[in-house]
Length: 422
Length: 128
Image (cartoon, each protein chain N blue to C red):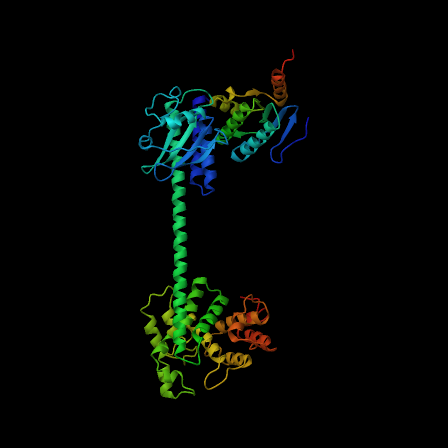
């Protein structure tokens, strides 16, 4: 191969490697160091450095240096004259013997020191009309002068490195902003969640017998949704729906809600307005989660169509509403009411058995029972249901076997491995 | 011959000469290992570095830059750098880029050690 062709091939290989390096997503310092090696190795330059210009003229940072002494720290401050010269795309030549005069004299404060370190030319890295940095280069190992062709290669490669630095810094800024946005979103979500919880507590205050009911329904709903494999976003949504499911009770007279006896048909009809009223209250709000108003509206619907307000059946009822329905019923059965004491876990499981498929969706009952069984069998990290039910409630020798039996009945696929499934 | 040294880079010492084996493709990763090994040998008092290219098929720009760094460090330590067993393509590359102005290029390790020995004896102080 003749030397000219060989030089061209060597240069093209270096440019290809450099392109790959600056477009990669690896470590930033490594990218700069490798790029500097590629530039130096293309023309066999014995020393060099890559300097980044920060905002303002007074700051530059040496990103990488080679052959100018490991213990040497390059600290440059550009004055306006030098900055303008470089921004114009012009080189500074510290040893005019090596290059034909390219005009311009670099700040003598640094020029002598750089020359003493073997630096011969200063090449600007201009990207989008901004001086991103400088490449400082020493002499060629061949001892020859830089040719016009060499300077063209240097200019192209320096620009490549500049674009690489610019892109990485841009990416860092974007990542930083994305992280800030994520944090702000988290904060907003927490604020929303806290506000809704406070609102749920306000709803429950109207009913002196069901304090904490909305929050517990939210938490039971969350447990069921998680057991069903919903995403974190969906789980958060169903929890909020649980918190707000009884918001419509705000429009129901307090006497009806607090009646210390079973209410008559007229009062019952008044009370049954609350899901639709809740929907009307929640509908105009722009919730960060889907279908919260619908979950409030349909949480008293039944699989067999005997529920209210619309008498929907099975597939017509949103799954979220079915979850809230079960959570609501479970809390109602396991808390004291003015006209009755709370029911035992055996009774509750029997109620589930009687009403699964007519009132409750089997998938939802199965998911709840699995979560409950994990707690009963000590397989759950956090015993949230146990805590909400209070000390002693689940201390029943038969509870686990009853729950397991129910799972087997309503969801035969999970009979053999009920707690471990899901 | 001395014991091999270095866990990644194959090398051994013959008197005050260190023989360091370049790998099949001299790029950043292998180049930097070789550079570290050379520095270690120079710090240990070696007066000549023989870099054996018998396994090396290809040297890229990064390899060239790192070799120049080794030459630089060796010159500062007053040590000589000898390249041995370089294939024809790489010899052309070294010639074109001017590396051969700074190193001795020999056919094989035997010649390299002879050349290094000659260098060492030249460097010996003359007694009067």
